[in-house]
Amino acid sequence: MSRHLRWVAVVLLVLGGMGYADWVLQLVLPVRADLATSFISELSAAGQPYAEVFRVSDLVAAVMFGLGAALAWALARSDARVWAPLVLLAACAVFETAAPLSASYTFGAELPEPGTGSWWAKVTEPHGVASFVETVAFLVALLTCSLALRRLGAAVRWRRALLTVGVVAALCGALDAVLTATLLLHGDAVGLGLVQRLSVSLTALWLAAAPTWLLLLRRTGQGSRDTSSSSDTRRPV
Image (cartoon, rainbow, N blue to C red; front, side, top):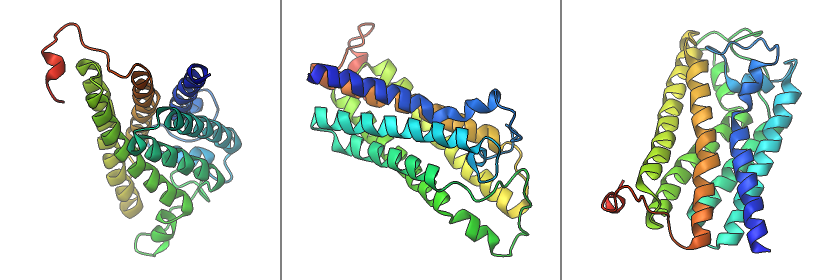
């Protein structure tokens, strides 16, 4: 039974993780959001024609990933510092679907004048607060999962590759924050959409791969070794 449940958790983690990048639906739906300048969250903002599509997609992906992380945590009975932030991340994503942006910022809406105080109201919307907590949860999971994979002796080349994906996603997230501040203060959003979509896509890849690998390694009790260089596997990341 536990073997079957483990594979259920794997499927939920992979599908839910990849579903985190459901912005790709924008490529096939006639939405007005510009890939280069718009927030991803604007796709599900109030008043947008396909808002419900993106909200449902977000909800399904978040619930699947959250259930997968919770089930993996129950099966592994360890690595709480990995699974707890991942469950929190999924919970924040679920909350975001229930508290979408009240309006779009970069299209179909007028931005408030800088210095009017309206910016603070926008930044502190429940959706924005949940997004911030979600980002912190991802950063914690990135660190703790990388350390757990290292302790289990996971193949160095793949561990480093996943760590690189996660770090680049985090750096893109930081740049996204800078560009968002620039938009809110000066009305310039050039590159914001591309940076945010890259960050979310890399995050989705990490979420689908890293926790799943950790769960599978826990099944055997040890990590897979990089047979191309036995000495390389002993070098720290």
